[in-house]
Length: 341
Ligand SMILES: [Zn+2]
Image 1 (tube, rainbow, N blue to C red):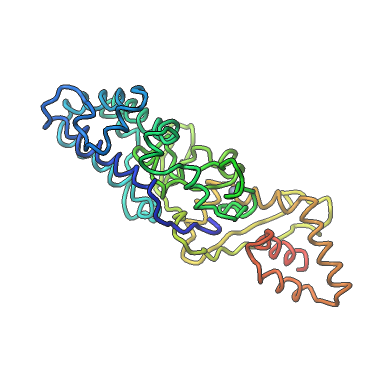
Image 2 (image 1 turned 90 degrees about the vertical axis):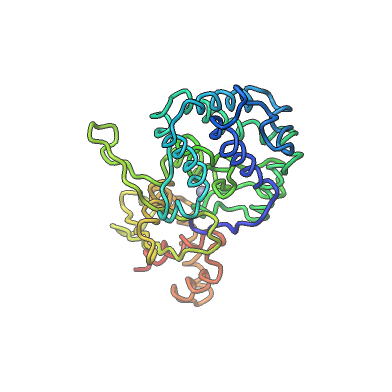
């Protein structure tokens, strides 16, 4: 993340308390509950409308299926499910590598029907329920929440390039599941795991790439996954990522991505920078950007400023540094420095 968001309190974040209660106190506790089936009377009264007033395919049915299966599980299996709820919602600690997540694969190893039911519940929460009146009248409208996070900032904080919709647009931009909801259960509506990012980052590059594991020998017999770390998107502080650009040939309008070398470094955060590039295709994106007509025009602007205003390249770049994250200057600076080398 080039510029992480600040996490601020909002009522909508309480949806996670509903998920935690339903799972930990009721579904995973099924063995200790007399009822043969799940019903809304088993949950706290304040949460009952979220079950009774929603299409039963989304909540009641999958919870009932999970409840019935949980009655047959042993202590070790229930412990894993509880760990999944606890750990998969500690997004900061998961990003920093201090705790381990639980994946759907591990639940599938217990029971594929249980995995299916829990996945249906978690997916429906985000895809359907949050947009329905029983949810938005209890918590908060997700569009309002989105606007309170992005405010007037129109640039993706992940790559620093792509546009995102601001609070002044009628429509809302995408919220990305930083830890993919296809891999990690119980955090589909954890708002520390939901970040507004651009269409490049969300829809084209990241998709369901695993944030926390690197796949080696993908698709081969000896495929393996290695745990890694990642930037926490709500850390609130700018990571001082250094972007170093080198052109392998003299810069002109024929420049192509293969003619460019980009190094991304950040003191003390080497693995997090590697994850950022792996997940979002950052180097590829920046190389492509350096080959655009628009970037070449920035160089020409600099050249004209140098000629007409008597500024040196260094003075021109120093001015850009005053607004490093505005107008893509974080990339223009190493781009111009590379040309001027
Ligand atoms: Zn982006």
